[in-house]
Amino acid sequence: MVDNSALTPQEVADILKIAKNTVYELIKRGELNAYRVGKKVRVDSKDVEEYKNRTKSFRSSPSLLETPGAPFPAKANPLLYEEIPRSSGFVICGQDIMLDILSGYLQMHPDGVQALRLYVGSYNGLYNLYQGNVQMAASHLWDGDSGQYNTPFVRRLLPGVPAVIIHLACRMQGFYVPKGNPKDIKGWEDLKRNDITMINREKGSGTRVLLDEHLRKLGILPKNIKGYERESTSHLAIASTVARGGADVGMGNEKSALQVKGIDFIPLQVERYELVMRKEDIEKPPFQAVIEILRSREFRMEMEGIGGYDLKETGKIVAET
Image 1 (cartoon, rainbow, N blue to C red):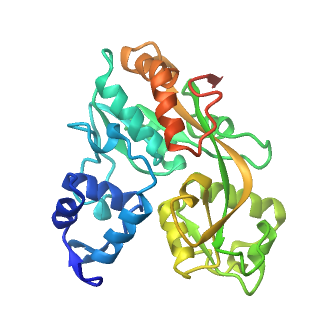
Image 2 (cartoon, rainbow, N blue to C red):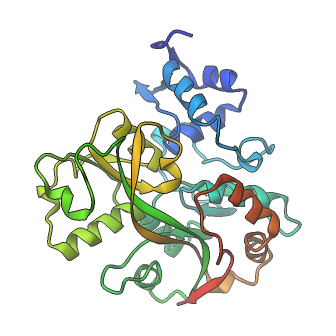
């Protein structure tokens, strides 16, 4: 394979022996680098090789990649995917692979449905739950004043809508830095140093909210941080940018750091990743099926096999608003 050759999504699918839609999904989540030429999506062959090497030690979930009819975003090209699908079906909102696996189990459950997936950040997910565009929204939004995850934001973003919050997992959030941490980055205040350039997550993501809340509490103005306005839409894309020397630091979870060579991970804060639904829906069969799946031994074993999650409270109803 020539390192600099450009491949179509179908050619990538043929090489990896997967569906073309799965290629689009990998691109959307930032697991496979891609670019546009006009309206066409192209992937460099060297990036396909890097993806293959990076994932050799990562056990792919059959629920996502191999189950016939596994759900994917409604539009074919994720690089152009901006519209919110208004569906009469069942839509789960969020970006973690845990939700893809949950969707696969839900499709096979006797009381389940074929769920659609909407890959947007926590803030936009809760907004779409309020608007009635989705049935469930995952969230990891930290409120700096109370020190709580999710509940304060659910109350603010779903005014007048009784909701139930179900725990998915705890994950470690932190900084991605080049191997060896050459700039000796240790914490939040290092971001204001003149010799450090960062790459940021998009507005509305839980990671971006975590950063902004800490900056607010420390009195650090975002405009004084080099690279603050540069955005990328996934943990893996952030980690890859740092590994390639495109930034000195980026934020993301520890699980993604394990999949990218050439970076170190600096742990900063344990976050709570949780699923939000309307209280009026919780007794309906598909919603009960989701709770049953989250509490099942099979689902827990699959997530433990992937690694990077604390599952002690998975499936527990932690709050009602």
